[in-house]
Image (cartoon, rainbow, N blue to C red):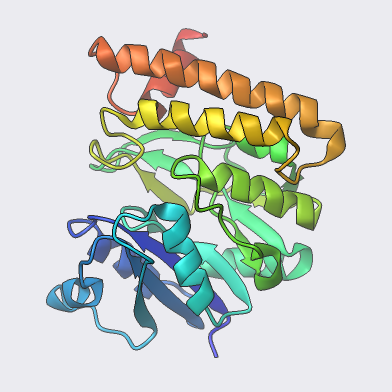
Length: 279
């Protein structure tokens, strides 16, 4: 029985999935399973085999229908998962070899732990990290997670994942999922070492030319859900989180304007440039 189930939503990642899978095969911790949820009909096991990647711990499941979205894909993988712990790896990102081994002891204590996501260009240059790099683990709350401007990919006890991702959200679904995880666990343990490489591919779902438009739609959905009280968050943080989402929406519209003006390519590079300018 695997200790960790790794969920991978895969949509048109034929060019990058083998590198992502190879980073799982390189993990120092060996008691894992990888469940690839194909959301585009591609046989990703065949893609991996063609690249010389064969391992009985890798399985594939199908999504309810083609292009059902990242939430539905991760839910399909979650339903098939057998591990005591769950974590996420997208098909165009990679891990450092020590990631699972470093996070498991923290997640066993607190139930929920993450590392310090590092945004990188496809050629390996760092753009930014979600939090300052350090050595000592500490707790972060939902507000600190969502205002970092970077996705987080936690390792969590299986029971915290219920009821899963919200399939109606096709963008920023991970932010809502993580906020609700933190509400259930009380806090998330952050290991401030960058062990996840969030690679900024120009045509990925979060960096395509129309990504800011899809983000605007999602932020509108999430704002309405927050105002209706449909997202489980700490009561004392509700007002701050609503305002933080409003700020994310303002930043996204500014990013969209920069994209249309030919002044920005990826959101992470846009934010890094703003931070350098002191905006």
